[in-house]
Length: 271
Image 1 (cartoon, rainbow, N blue to C red):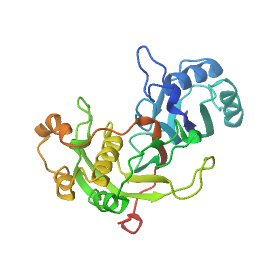
Image 2 (image 1 turned 120 degrees about the horizontal axis):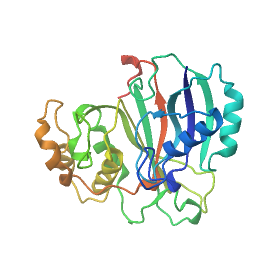
Image 3 (image 1 turned 180 degrees about the horizontal axis):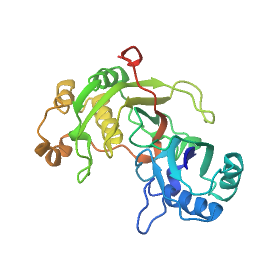
Image 4 (image 1 turned 60 degrees about the vertical axis):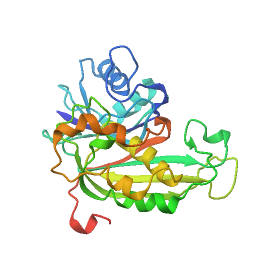
């Protein structure tokens, strides 16, 4: 029988979601815990990979188990008891036999946080971006260019194994935000929100880093436009275009915040 797991994790202790040969991963921790409790080898399939240090406030995975039925409430309780403190199981529920955490996802949302004033309580949770002049209005103008279906190979980490670099972005914008714990008052914290049907490896961090160059006046809007190709761009360009975009922003300030599985109607597509 197939089960869906909704969970959250702090990525600081992991090399990412996916199992690595010699480094801790969220997937490995979850598979070991499930195998111990269910007394069989369990393979967990996640909604996608997250990079080293990247966290998730809402992540979805699925697994198959020969034991029927599983007491989901008890399994959730026991998993939270033995998993690392940096991993939290939000819910476990039976799923349709053909449910797939990765391929059935229709929308994913990431948020990237940065703060403009030195704040010890945000260290490791947000990106301290101390440059004195940053134009968020211009950054939002550039972010609006991301909306729609485009070839994002410029923002894809070299060596990625995706068959295509075409993605559809539904929303992308910067907004001031508040943190629960902060040393200072006032709008010194900002959040970049981006929603798309899929993301390439390192895509969000590369976009954020490039937008910050726009905000600092180091890149013009027409330069940013040139990074976004039409969806029928040649796949042969993928390996040679990453260096045209800006440096990737640090991973510790990036969070996967939502995954949706219902179809998105045209009325639900912002922008």
